[in-house]
Amino acid sequence: MGLIGGGFIMFSLRRYRKILEEYNVFERCAKCGTCTYVYGSWAPACPAFNEFKFLTYSLGGKLLLAWGYLNGRLKLDQDIARVFYSCTLCGNCAYQCQITETDGTRPIKLYAITLLEAMRKELVRVGLGPMPEQKRVWDWILKEHNPYMAKHEDRSLWFPKDVVKGLPEKAEIVYFVGCTSAYIETEIIDATMRILNRLKVDYTILKDEWCCGLPLIRTGAPSQLVDEVVNHNIAAIEDAGADMIVTSCPGCYRVWKEDLADRHDFKVMHTVELVAEAIERGELTFKKPLKAKVTYHDPCDLGRHCGVFEPPRKILKSIPGVELIEMERSRENSWCCGAGGAVAFWLPEFTMNTACERIREAEETGASLLVSACPGCAMTLKNAIKEKGSRIMFRDITELILEHL
Image (cartoon, one colour):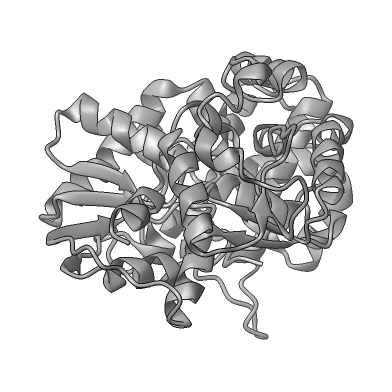
């Protein structure tokens, strides 16, 4: 489990109420506003509050709305739905909350994001969610198994043919590609597969990979819709004879490792974990130096939600010549790229503004290279670099690894 809890909400908000009452989540929230800033430095922490400048969009505001609804004092409407769907679900708000029980439990840190996802499921149940643009994504996932309005038959179009032809049908490891790598950040596929070859691991790819289900899960889709894609992928991995999933996508990683943890027995690793372990064992060394100042962006799903902070930094520090410079908001306090929670599908301006703020922060480090470990962050941050006309360069860490072996 990550730093702020996790797990896919397979039940209704009202069944979740017992947990909320046991830990007094609503009553314990003091509406102090700490959730909107990085505790101690007071840099902005909440993208939605930073964008809309209204406390309703903060975690404290959303907890109050949920409390009012659960206690029959508030009726859900389209305005409330917009508030809950204008959240990247990055979890920074929950991490900043300092409220602590006598036993050391930090209930809001543990349960707040789960509550926000449960509220989205409730909004769907009463016919107010998701937003129309997100509903079109649902329809496309069920039709073509990806959220990008692309054809399923084109999913493997950018796979490196010289690598794919040598892969076995069955293997110990399945490389789960993910939709963003398959259709947009395609360089990550090539880099990941060639890295796996260099590591000499027994791996394959699925003949018919579907979306992991993240856009459905994060927007509150009914369980039967999620089950359709999840069951397909689980069966495909079992047919491949694999007992491990490796992915370069933190979104897919979190879905498999946290949301679906009770649905399978596969071990789940992000590429950075696999590579960092190989470096630790002395099985992988970087021979080509990179004389550059580098700053690293922690993807929310990989870092704050799943607790993977050290492996990417170990990799970067192992490349000769790299000077790693941390941004003001890094690790647990990392600023979201702006695309999380399926917000980018219906609030692109909000996503762009949030991403541009991250580029500003990266520029302030004096680094010439911004690195991350997420195809979604790559897509979003590269768009922001172009929008700002920034001189900073972006590379996904898989590309950097391959280039300097």
